[in-house]
Length: 125
Image 1 (tube, rainbow, N blue to C red):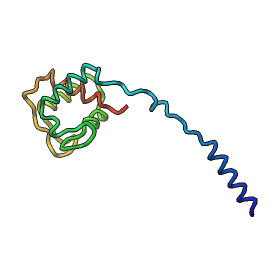
Image 2: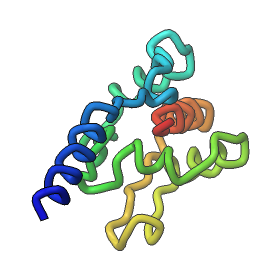
Image 3: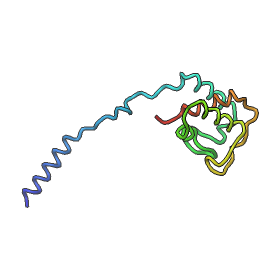
């Protein structure tokens, strides 16, 4: 019986010594510096001038969904950018719950598209 305990202890020691921490190659890649991206800069500037941050945060749900959740739900293609720009301008409800997003008719289509591009850049990679 004593031999079994010794054998198990030796196996546990060997396993512990051989347990290398493997590096995640994806985690080692540096994150893209978005601050140099002109779509990021312009979109951030437009959002800062608007009342968007009253209902949205980057990583946390407030009244509306987090920008990062929006980015993770949609692809960053022209149709999506146009659709999100229309939602910014016209408002909407039902996609993220029953609380409606208020319309922002004072925002131009071009500015709303820049804002949508900014949000889509926040996707988790």
